[in-house]
Amino acid sequence: MKKSIAFILGMLGLNMATACGSQNFSNADVEAFAQLIVQPGVQLVDVRTAEEFAEGHLEGALNIDVKLETFIALAKERLDTTHTVAVYCRSGRRSAHAAELLSAEGFKVVNLSGGIMAWSKAGRTVTKDAHEVDAFTTKSGKSVKFYALMHASIRIVFDGREIQVDPVRRLGDRTTDYSAMPKADYLLVTHEHGDHFDKGALAELKGDKTRFITNRRCADMAGEGEGMANGDRLTLEEGFTVEAVPAYNTTEGRTQFHPKGRDNGYILTIDGLRIYIAGDTEDIPEMADIKDIDIAFLPCNQPYTMTTDQLEKAARTIRPRTLFPYHYGQTDVSHLGQQLSDTGIDVRIRHYE
Image 1 (cartoon, helix red, strand yellow):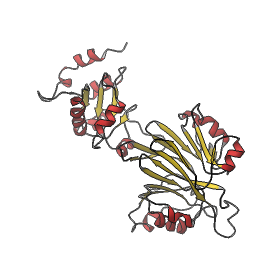
Image 2 (cartoon, helix red, strand yellow):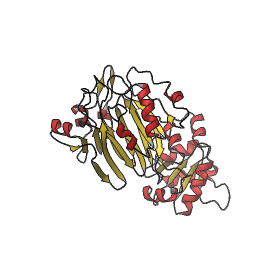
Image 3 (spheres, one colour):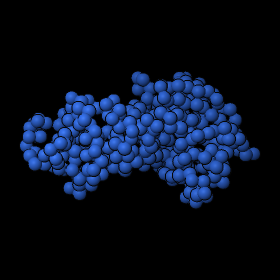
Image 4 (cartoon, helix red, strand yellow):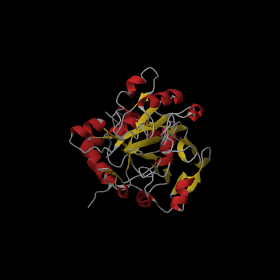
């Protein structure tokens, strides 16, 4: 039988003692903290950056970065003042500061002494995501995570929303089990090719409230969905928009793969963070009109999309802050970081083969 939180707090003794008389929160060592966070109602919060959280965290933790100006506002939005809050960081210093801030707002807070470093040293489990994940922070301090699934398939998680782009279950000997993932709030498909449009994957991800957004051709083929043409724009919810942009081949002998006007790329604007998912395209003239991109996914598998030289040209045109080459198959993209080293673009190579 699980002990009550009050009993646990009372039994922890010196481990839960305050560090000084004026302190309004408690400190717990690893063993005490581990006992605490399995109790019903306890809210576990990782106060490190989104990037640190993505590298490894305690299972079930909510990530709210204490360094953000919006920390308290986010905490009030996501946490219940009637339940204990258990906080941790890397070494315990940032979480102690977070505990002070939260205590001043009426939260009952327990801080992990020594942070996740002490937790790991004690042999406790740290959760890491099954797929490569990159985390970014929006203008209001919320986390957006990008999971490298495979090829053109991207999972995006934002503030409890699940966004799946071009989900495909199998390519060659690589598979993705979408049945093990949460139902999608939004499904985006760029075009009809089998490495982007998989009805079975869509069926596994659809829930009662899922919105399926695609190009008009796929909407017709599926007999459902919201078909967008190049230039269309949708507001999905407050602070979250999607714009369909051109994606097509221009090189002679390739135009049959992705004819102009049929397929979509997408620009997502999520709480001020601008994300360009190019779809299957070459370095088309319309890229000159794509501005203020924080994160870009650009394809690179000749002859169907871009060569590495075309991708470099596209990156120099768009100037994203962070670039993910994707859909690259057997194309060697390892040198793109060096090719773009003079631009200041953060080039990240993930397993989007």
